[in-house]
Structure formats: C-alpha cells, structure tokens
Length: 90
Image 1 (spheres, rainbow, N blue to C red):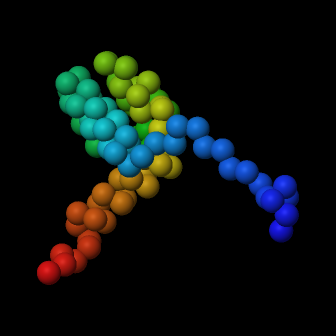
Image 2 (spheres, rainbow, N blue to C red):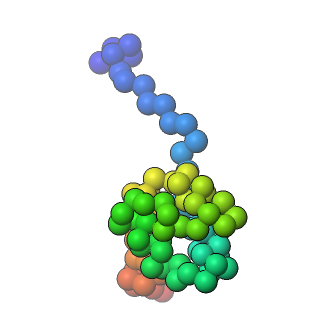
C-alpha cells in the first residue's frame, strides 16, 4: 500500500492507567470526605453517566469527567483481575 493511502492516527493526551488510578483515588477520597459511600457513588456514575453521583467538592466531578467512563471501567476490571484473580507466579 502506498504511504499516502494509509490512514494517520492522531491521539491527543491519551491517559495512562496511572492517570486513571490517580483520578479514581482522588475522587474516592473526596466522596469519603463528604460522607458518601464512594463505591456506590462511582458505580452509579459508571452505570448512568450522570455526573451528579460524584461530588463537586474539590473539583472531583470535573476530574472524573476528564476520563471516558469505559476507560474507568476497564481500569477497575484490570485492577481487580490483577489483584484478585491472577494466580501468583513463583
């Protein structure tokens, strides 16, 4: 295939797993500070897409909206699988 026929891919500021972890950790703490159950609130946000499940305290709502919900879900599943389901290697 001629080089001019290939489709270029442009990615702007794609987030790393570490970025997603940092944002989830931050949002979790802000939800706790406000007295919410962070797990329930984050699940509500992931299922509904409604950002009002996340407190605006400390700009937590703004922070979590910087990450695509599917990416958040993917990172949560990956972390769970790596910590709970993978057999330890000897």
